[in-house]
Image (cartoon, rainbow, N blue to C red):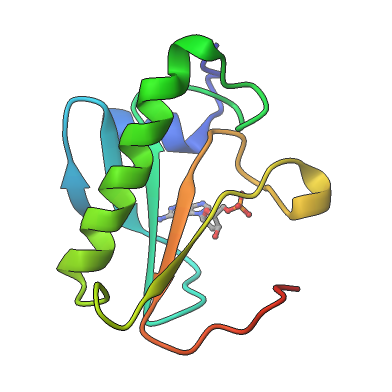
Length: 116
Ligand code: DGP
């Protein structure tokens, strides 16, 4: 259930500004406020789903759609050839700070592995 205090629900609703780069009926993509790479976008569902762990069977197509939008965002940013990374942080140990599921799209520099 969407919380009144969910900042990403507010971005979806247009109640707080974001640098949107893509949107459709199910997803919105916008620039991360604290970019960790030259390209750092977030792809989120319009529907409030708190985390990957909270996603249910009914969300399977939605999760697939988020990944396809992530690939589109990366391609539009010019990273189809050179590569990019998608990340879904889940829970406190992974560093999830916003509990509305989101796919990070990072590109434009060499990304190290393993991540921190
Ligand atoms: P995570 O740590 O995986 O939950 O990532 C949350 C990301 O959301 C983090 O990189 C910063 C970004 N973020 C938080 N608040 C805002 C906001 O109000 N606007 C935008 N554009 N990004 C935000």
